[in-house]
Image (cartoon, rainbow, N blue to C red; front, top):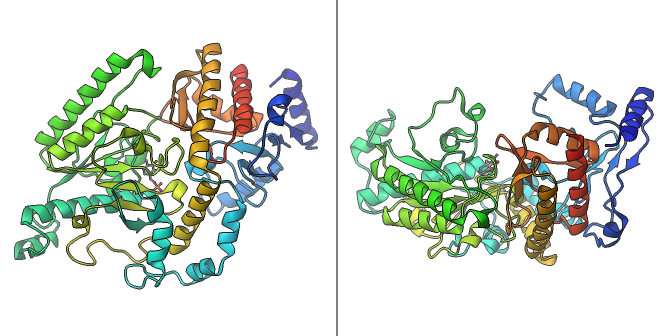
Length: 498
Ligand SMILES: Cc1ncc(COP(=O)(O)O)c(C=O)c1O
């Protein structure tokens, strides 16, 4: 921000006379835009310093009844549109954080609005079924035309859940039941009396000491079971009892990848060897390995397709299930519908978990033996939500109509090229740029990360971080080249203020 604009902002806040300021962007770039959302503003608008007086007052009001310490921005969803998020003071920001990577096709998307108004949706909302007991007659149809229409290759069944952590935990449970069922000799084998008795006191063999292996800096959620596989930050885990489960090292790669191919391959080999050693030696047998295609909350850490193929081979060799957590990477953001589509696996993962941009959650699987041998072993009241499944179907229709996965791959390439230029110009502020060829799933490290994020709103963009030093871009699938231009200009403006 120039000293002039900074002083005019200060003056405005003193005078309490908000004057809306449209952020200027390079005109020839703006002219090229054919927005998916015709109602979207052409550029961010700043009306006050952020947070403005109305946002401050509303936050104080909320604080009386709700913990506000994690609030990023109190939002006016009725005024948010497409890629733009609005606050109560008339500020409208380009949103490349998108509700922690969970909005796929834009705020107030007209197609989703129509889905929301449909009689099918009204029925689903006001008559929420206990899906395991009373699914509606059209549940199979809703699944086939929605969630299962985009099922990862080789996986044709789904267990629906309510959030990412829930999806992972139910997948872990399926893995444990499958493991013990194999040990017992098949689904028809009855539980022993000893198993039935011991599980009631949380003891083996009914409650066996099995484990799920995850990776250093992984994030798989915050519920009890998933938390034991989360290794990103202590603050998530403190005070909560954890399972005695192993963590393997995740490759620590050097960027740009093409300049460090040999060292990176060695690093990945080291991690694979250690993974295999842990599977063989860990005192609580490993039933499944869970991995994110790109470690997201942990700092946007990447590994190559070869690493993941190696992981798949190791899990096969040791009869350990391979769970791919696509909660953050899934539904198009990496330029493929599922990030693991980038890997060319010979055999599909055993389970793929999803949530966020799907707006519903669950895990896909293919092997029928992953269904527990008896009903009610994998069960809860709602087991997902048909209303949310209908929204995902609407999202899929929008993705298909606008060809948004391919679109995101192209926009990501364009954005990445722009960021490469900025990283050459400002190497101290834009380090370890990563996510090339991964759609808009892009990140970099910067020594003044928190300051960078805090200043972003002042230039009209909402950006998130991950890990300790990464700025992560998680725009929606409707993010276009003209948005990328605005973002690139904004990033440069922020850097100049640091
Ligand atoms: C990879 C991954 N797995 C699981 C989760 C947990 O999802 P939820 O917060 O919906 O429980 C997240 C959330 O950020 C995630 O990024």
